[in-house]
Length: 611
Image 1: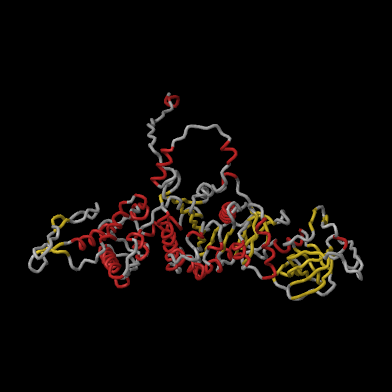
Image 2: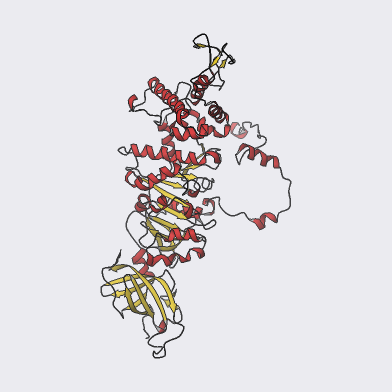
């Protein structure tokens, strides 16, 4: 049947639940339709169709397209072209208002029309507050792709895509949409975003809207310092001693608790009652003093008939990590005698001392003005640390962890997340807490520390954020190129997904599990998405939409682009210094130098001004 309406596609042939089968009309045999000067392709999977129902319109998404091999003999070509579409009903519009879900089903024989640009504006064009623009629809580039900011944060989100699919650029664009939107859109000057940047990609890209903390800071960046005494005792001891249990662990925790009590007595902390202090209470204490007291007990020797007279010859120096000296013990009954009550933790104490002397861990074990003296007193408290991370003058805080040794990276991330979540959880009644001023935590390369098979502090804390963070104003954004390796509990709590190009079948299967069965076919295009193109679905999107993410300007793009092999290999060979390579390798810092360039600078005076 032919129709004068250029949007006409065909008629409803069958209805089964939300699935509708459509027989295509002969008028759309070409597969192309030109409407109001725009060309539309017919039968694109993921495109929208409109089914008029009087004063309201039903909208559906094309999930499957096919054709019979040949018309049946008893049917004429005019009656059945042999071409059909499968559509999943997703919502309805009455007037200019679109709502998800449907109140009635179409009838057999109802006309089906192509959803043109004006129809798409009814679906995606929202004037409500709290929406940010992240790009444009792939099917209609004049229509902005908007997502709801409230649902993005409170229901958590995940950005998933293979290497080179445009994840880093998507994140940079998304954060800019929140912190520095276009002039004619809503601004969020009190936005609060904390990003864990594993590879140091975003420091330059977001420098104008972010405060950067780095282990190896550049000009304009601040030193990343994390006080060890704010970490949980068990996780800290696992790193410092290689792991202890039983009486050996008790020896460490008892001494640690004793030092925290002494620190509180010397300088009482506001709001803290001595009876409520535990080994995990974030009260400063000296690791040097902890080591010195324990090593003194381990190596002590005694003399005398009762074996109770100390033979100490030198008290040592806790601040310089010099152990006390005792007379060496002797065999037999002559003495001196070993301390029979020693815990046998000398090996663990030696490892603790080596950690304290290792310069690579200074950001954690010697945290500047947060490092306690032997009595447990610090120059600055945790309020200054949190003010830098969460209360800066810029909306984004980037913790550049690219210079952190891999041996401690996973524990460090877990500790950072624990510090931030615990502080916002316990301050939920304060204006600085997460309820009054929510926080979005962006976690790059999440599969490295949120793995399915890892029971780490990071996984435990992010699970808690995913399950309970909504109530306390803490939202998580998980970024990964291998969603199949991310803890399933964490990923299942994400309400919004940005799915970029994914080639691995197991990764695609994990993403497909987030959509209703009828719309799973929309994700069949994941392997062929263009770079920077994403399918956005979930709580923050009114409907699943395929869109092109807005690219930031060249100077605001992350440092994640591929090496330019042809250009670099076409250059003439030049002199190279591999001593610089070795210097960076040994120092575990990409910007380490062999020789510091000391430039003498003289003050320049303007002689003409003096005349």
